[in-house]
Image 1: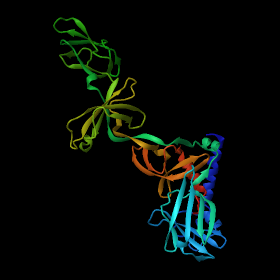
Image 2 (image 1 turned 60 degrees about the vertical axis):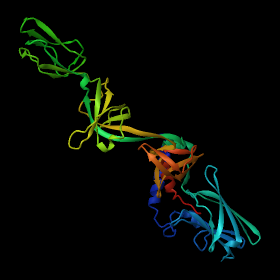
Image 3 (image 1 turned 135 degrees about the vertical axis):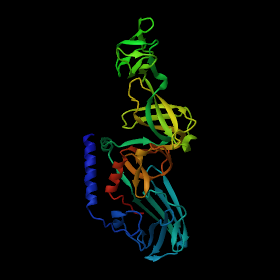
Image 4 (image 1 turned 120 degrees about the vertical axis):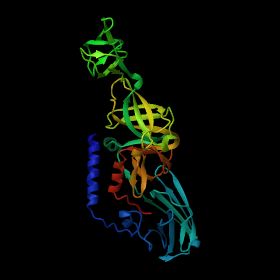
Length: 417
């Protein structure tokens, strides 16, 4: 990590520690869903606790109502501190968000306030322009109210390892996790017996020795001809069993077993309820229980019937083992891709953080980062479909997003509607 990155993380940790030890009384009303912090102390307040916008003797009190309903503005008009009939006020708002989007909000009178005609999407972070017409006069206010936002210099972000990506389409794979073990391929195992009954005169190999096809394993003296003939390896492989010693007699018994482990199989077990999701040829990622080895292959065989008390079915995957990475008996996990979809918007799970009550990602515009609450869809454990909250083309933090969250939280993520 660069010196800039270490400085950024050091400052971030120090500020976070300071925030944790600075006390807990932030002064906002009980039950308020957001932290209004210092911004609330600076802005004038109206009788309902909202931001007060004043122009001469006319004023608007801006509040956000979000208990039991999607967030909406409730605006209370006042003249000389007294309530004004909301039917006598025409009001509109422009909310300029990070990235250039502008939400234009209309209002209609209800009871003693003006209610926005649409819900207000999170985050509630924007530059506001409010225009009101009342008593034959036009009143205009502009102010900023930011939350869940921070600014980080590019060299600091790079040094800390903050990674970004552009939101776009991707592939979501549904996977089924099965467990089993590595087994030798029976088609690559040979038992070696003497062709004619006789006496073993010499033995040239031991268990564990590698042999080549045609290599002599032992010499046998025939009982009938008294001629000595060579017993040779039928395949290239490893001696895994030896039942031959000099001076012993043999009469058709297997003297050696030779196994070729250049190809092995992963025998996985699947419960009958999942059998219908599997088919031959589906891609599989096989991983050793200790995570030391991994390989990709495909389903080669699915047993038609179960075995044992639980009626689990055998699923077989053939693995290339020319490098000897897999050992028979080794426990493995197989992740079988049972379905795949192409989704319009997909991000890695590493981009997600929990912020307040939401799962969020952080968008980046220039040097500014801001949270976006997400509506999530399907996931395969590594990638997740985004149904709302991000748009294709948005730049978002894809790696080390916890640093952005921590930097935002140390400042209190304050805002004022």
